[in-house]
Length: 142
Image (cartoon, rainbow, N blue to C red; front, side, top):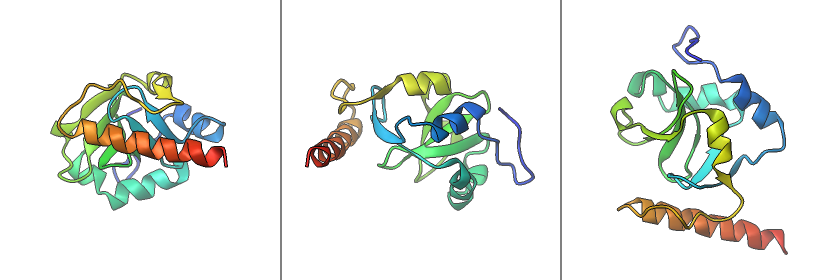
């Protein structure tokens, strides 16, 4: 997992690339914070990491998606999934989401997440995720 290219960008885990090539959800709810996820296509991960200056502001992490609301989803060098604020990005602010990619995909939910523990900003993110999911479900039935 810790393999780096010449610019210090880690390689994506093969499990992520395989998942993205399959029919698994690329955006949706999570049963844990941040409550919502949006995956970046594997061929865009390097560009997004460069654009967000991840190797400068959060060395040792590889962004692969977002919460849709201000957090980047990233792998650490051990393959754990964390969320890091995109504004004021720092490795010190990384919060665990899952111990592995396989655990992350087990936490994907088909319905809006209403069981998250409320936090000062978490309640807002949960409401945003629930609203976004509701719109998607409604558009599905049109």
